Length: 359
Image (cartoon, rainbow, N blue to C red):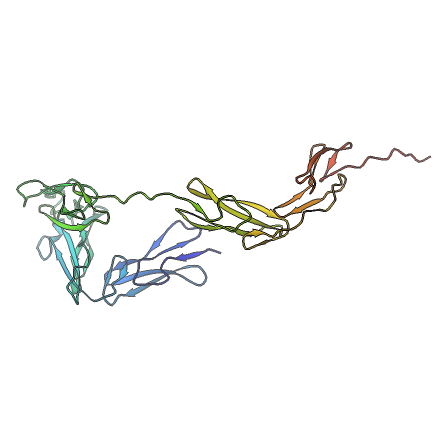
């Protein structure tokens, strides 16, 4: 059966993802207007989709936890040719009780779909930013409907970093700016980002960079420091330990083998990566460690009997290699190789054939 995991466990107020074994798709919660599409797992391990109406609205793939005031503006809204001008929709969110600015503006840009449809961003009911799909009579180019067959007005606003791009220092040229505008750092944390609000005019917004601002762009997140630690000191089958690397925590564990025997799986560090090695436990496994016991050999070192040696961390059965037998034993502790005079078969030397005849 498939295994289904849900990162937020049906929580409408956090962003969650669902993964199903055997399926490479990651299902992430998302907003549709005031509603949240929440993914979760059924008791049988299948994907469940719930359309939930958020009381305070939905933003960034989660329901808002508090009542808010919204300010929505659309650069091409309420104009006769709004579909013929590539516009931007800007949504600002404030905490209603304190009028505190909760987050940087959410920017949605009009865009073409398949050269025929226009995905038009608008300010909808209760000042929420919404989108509508409009069929352009003459086709769609450069984020706007054509005004006639093959006719589209050339944009006079250009942004070298492609729009609202906090991670690249860009420059803007627009009809409403006398000089070229370049993205800049307001302070060590915030960026002033220029962008085209439609095909003609430019504007800018302030954004707080998570890792600080430098040279007109948000600084990239520092690369994670890769380390690996092991609480039992490394390759140690005598002490229960937990090994931790960048991918998670791994504790030494007991493993039931297909033949009914047990192994101890020992985790340890190989550089900065956690890896594991298993050993067979002769007397069983408990709490991640082989149960200790005295060595036994079922054939007491007899080359002509197939035997099995059991010790704390080994289960070894006599085996043939051509005419040679490897006989496992407790003394010597590992065993020895013996050349069988009459050949070797199924883990034991073959007995000498009798030369007696019937008279």
